[in-house]
Length: 404
Ligand SMILES: *Cc1c(COP(=O)(O)O)cnc(C)c1O
Image (tube, rainbow, N blue to C red; front, side):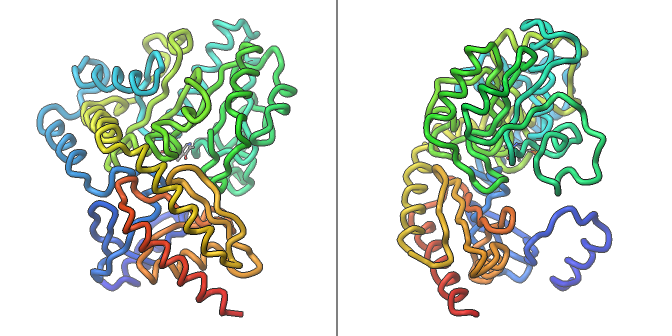
């Protein structure tokens, strides 16, 4: 079938809830993917940070296949040894007390919301159905109705109401606003340490530390959504490690699934997680042996391959090389580790156009909103591959700057 035929079939039979670049991928290995015509591309998005260990990572595939052939999905009605190993390791690397495994990121966030509210009622003593959770403007925590209900993005919300109450929105990165928004009914502050979908927005230095102090003083849970920023993406194993020891609650997902399987988790302090008793929450596939063995291997790869160090060093190089381009099209380059946003001056070009041109040169990226190009390559990328990517960006921007 032709490329256009494949795209037309998707458009004919599938919901149009995404706007993909016009490329049809057929194969992937490491940092590279190939289309149906055999053209090769450097994957500079890595499935929104889910493919940090590279496509078809042999260690991940081996863990997955071995487990699938041994014991696949028995459900949580029974114990398995691998699940205990996985949650223990999750707690060791994050410093948290307990974990609750789920599948998608949104489910981990829903779990965090349930835990925070119950903790609010049962531990903090908030009156029934009064618990409030503070969130940040331009947040992205997933796509369930509850979660989009506290989004500030009209596109995510429009037509999906009515939404549940119980959320207060403050400007991102504003600790004073957090302090002012807290009431005796506040059970938690839920926030991304860097806002990914919003356009790689880095809060002012010291924000996480101050936010945590404010939460502590007011008996409010400090919950970080590290579904995108975790697993070495920002130059530390977890982004909070740039500023604090650990939060009270933490959501992980994306790269925890090794690029091949949905694996997520909510992690928390013991007194928070202990609000769940049998029957109060669950997931048929959450924590199944395949997920557990993949998650365990993803954590091991993060350590063995020193992905945080790589992410930090290569991220600094990528940022400084992009800045050195001094292109009139670039308004700003921002981010930490290998989570980088390149802000395009809309007077010159749309971010989408930049991504389309980069695709023609063999570099796959995706815009987020109108003006930001997101760079989030697999963390196993090499220095030479980064250099090659920057050359493609340089040539693309030069080309676009010549156009009226
Ligand atoms: C991707 C993402 C989610 C949602 O994860 P899904 O697996 O798509 O449900 C939640 N929070 C953040 C910060 C994310 O980047």
